Length: 239
Image (cartoon, rainbow, N blue to C red; front, side, top):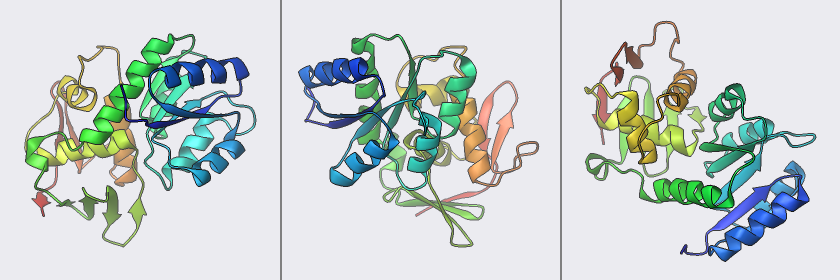
């Protein structure tokens, strides 16, 4: 059972909203179900939300636009639903900040499993024991505040990260001289075996490089070791 976590469902299909709301409530969650971005904003203003189940193909403001908007000021976990099931849609969803995705049609049981996994990762991060005594990391022109989960540049600007991006950057910073493979990163991020066709780690590395102003063609901060994985390319200091 859960501790009455509040799940916000955003889907324009009334039947899906009802189905998911009923199933999640039976599994111990509190739910609010809305049909569009405008109602989503109202719900977020009115109460605390622990996770958003967000449909990609919403009329008007679609799920990608809403995710970008949310990530500009919030790290609320987002599980994106897509009816298309094509890789490009999943990749774009992850690029703009979704924590996970699920293709329609799906079983409610699988949805609950994904929600539990996301919330578990959110609650228990940072997961690595080496991180527990660290308040912040300084690397290059950047500082990652672990407690506030904020990323700040030397020029004073702050940059929003999704929950998954924060965890990925934290993991890399906590192993500053170690090359971590995709499978190792996926295991730390998701706590499950990697699907050899799952490119979500690469997508999030690309997104982090954009945020960190790291040249994708010749990255200096997060370096790719071909055939092995990723490693920090600048000195890392712990506070």
